[in-house]
Length: 358
Image (cartoon, rainbow, N blue to C red):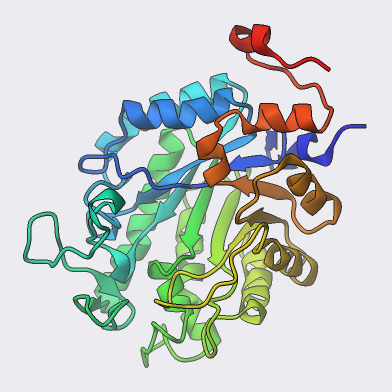
């Protein structure tokens, strides 16, 4: 019997060879947003390793939308050429290439993690002014962002739309909109970071407005037969913040708006939030969104073992398993997982002589 982890998954015109997804993980290895051979090898290795869907790290839709000066970007046409090379290689290996489109909002203009990850003041080298729904810094020691005015909001929407058009030209088959981890869209969703009094703030309906308008713009340039995902933080782990109940209600509306799957992460918008981290700790949120909003979900968060991933699928908690750190440690996690589950999958012919045997 085929483990559910290795059953194909069809979304619109795309069929994934299995349910294993490489999660977007920032590499902080770009100059001016350009992909390079690091990204080709990093993403390509995971395709060789057998994953069904490979999603790039957060690709900034504008220079000011980058988390750091070293982020991947898709904010100018010149970025397309190298991305096209990468998607071509991924597809040659039988995987599907996806891209996460993102704007960091108030969490922009930071150092790389290995240089301390601190915010770079806007008047220093490699720093710039950040933008947010409200002029509230992420931490008290950081420079306050500039509150987006109407023109700024229109620019954000236009930048997402233009980035989606470039993603299509670059050969991507899936777009994931980053609405999680305290970045711009999440900042609009949360009453903690969004204290606007116009049509983009206040009520739940107003706070989700920007995301729905971004989706509407993307759908004008993204083909109907290609999937659209949204990553959300299903909870902020903070009283008075964005909650799982909010996420379920949002997911119902996202389904109506044409979103095909919700990638359910958590946290990131409240500094110092107490998060009960442990194996599979976010999977219950994927289960609740899936059950109550009747929309496919992806589970992410310390999923490190083949049987653990299989159990999540068998329980009906999610449709896809989105792997991050474990697939950094082992690019061939899918090949190993199949062996551990007693299932024989096709290996790259170049690697067959190393294949495990029962």
